[in-house]
Length: 399
Image 1 (spheres, helix red, strand yellow):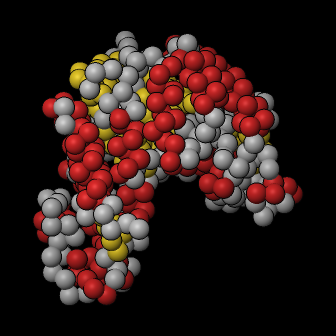
Image 2 (cartoon, rainbow, N blue to C red; image 1 turned 180 degrees about the vertical axis):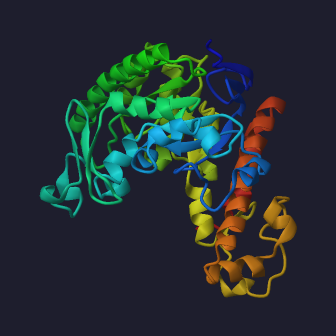
């Protein structure tokens, strides 16, 4: 039985943009807009699922590439699926692995260019990822072993991981790639989208698992014609929702999201991949994004960066050595209720794992709460005022 559907419950007028809704999944509801914490290897780094639930998380996202390499998707399936394996009692997402096989697998990370080698310092002979029309050969970032991902294998991995929301396999491009290559990669992504849908449908028909949704992934970089082209193409296919991915110039994020949401079906959820900066999230929500994920809150927290309403600061600075106030005086999270800046600073400097945990809990709580406030402001009609006042305060010291 298909227990997955999305409904818009409120908006600022046009239901394609700045909207509130509910994603219904077999394992619970996700009230949108919502920030989805990333548990790359079936774990939010240094944070337990009980802690992330207390922080207000409604769902978590794990990574098909990493779980394929370790411990193996067959093992996760044997354990009862991703949620049971990690003791999470709500909805789960898995990404397709497309980003990782072409970033970690290439050794270039976010500077990857599959076409213009002069944009990187690694010669072709040292490349770790190679794309063809059928799939991608890549070397594991763990041990250098050679692997191949195809749309069919990505679907098999995600289906066996058992996530409520999965993503079609796509080809990642970067802003370094020229228009001609963006177009070539987009055509390949469209072909892979069709293969992903077919393979996922066959897996659903062969098994009796709770319904798993499949989202198509939109690429096209900063090009309006390509973004609209892919939105129309994928929007006509039988996807349950859509992931907006690929290279996006920060200054154009809201504009690009609006382009695709003008073309995509309004009655299906939209997920923006890899975004968590406050200005980006405001722009995305205003342009119609329902959910987004990012590793940044925990990653920067482990390095001492702390989110507050007055901007981000480094708790590692000597100024906080004897500061016995909370990380954020305006926050009521577990960390801020129980621990001080001086203590968290000490833990991080001593490389105690508890320091990573306390900083991460705060940053995740802060981000989740911000998106919750956006949701409430759309309901009561104050979104534009919240955006103006919140961003003015957060970035007031940024030069």
